[in-house]
Image (tube, rainbow, N blue to C red):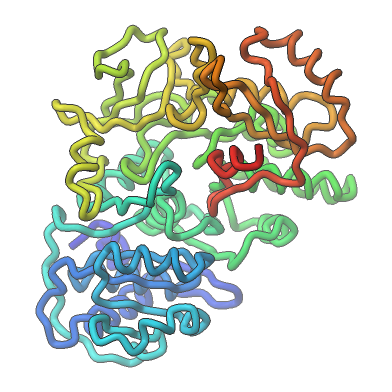
Length: 491
């Protein structure tokens, strides 16, 4: 039996999930997921890694169906609930899903599959009251889940992880971040992504903690839940912290004081999935008394590097290798570099995914000859902590022979008066290869000439943006990360 299920059996009466006014104990999770697994088996002894795509809103139903797929021996393929049909169709057909499970509110968008002769289409309500059958013993080295990468340079790739991979990812975080049975956390992140599925949901349920779902992000509602005093662990992306700060600043002094007092009692606050601006970290510290724990991970590896739970959390740095995860920094020839030189982060460990689904060549290309996964992210070791400089294909601008970190320029731009947010990219240039360009979200009318002179006082000329563009907002993906290829199109 998988460890996450063993915890549920050990704590049958403990509250596992809170959804609105409803609470569900671990026993209810087990019973419902067993029932779903039996229904999916439909007389078979084992789904034998059949891909089961499911489109279900976050909450008790989401978790029980994910667990039910695993218990029946299937591979869970969570579908993003905000995707248009062509994107859903790509995932369903790329995985070769044989079963689709849809919540009532998603029946229409998935309608073309309802009458399919090749795919078994199930409505969530169809499973109610189904009888139990004997469930298969699932080997931990079998496929468990396929999540899709953001596809910044090509069509998204399906990342296949095994149950052993997931257990390695979860157990490492549970130990490193001191998860415990009396923790209470909030699930607000998209559940087609490793951050929400692994770091929040799976770590909480593995630990016997309580997981409360919020159907959609609303800063006022989040603060309202904080005020109840139950939540002591919170994980989010930088965009969410930014919006919480913005809402906090609109509140009365007495409301601000109340919220700050509550936040100071939290055990842990984490930020990830995108680079955390130093300015956001510092503002949140002034509000909450917490330096956000920033970490580094990917769909392919779960989490690999983290600032310490106990010890210095260094702004602008992602920390040190997590226990059981090996990290090295290499050049383009996969040769290990000295600690103070920037290079690609490469990862090895039981947390690393099995394969890109149906793409053996892409899988082979993603690994070195001696089995290290090539992340494509550029970092440097800075006084014992890794510091991300950017993603080789997106955040590293190659101009006039220099490799320039877009993230470094963004950090400085955000400190200029009137700059609400920004995104820095390289755009093709015949003379320089690429030139630095910056898209600015502003609260005021900016004098770009004055801003550029200000930037030149703080950066070498070759790092100073040559082009600026004022925009209403920056294009982002479901996790709040700026999609820089879309940003390039604006120029």
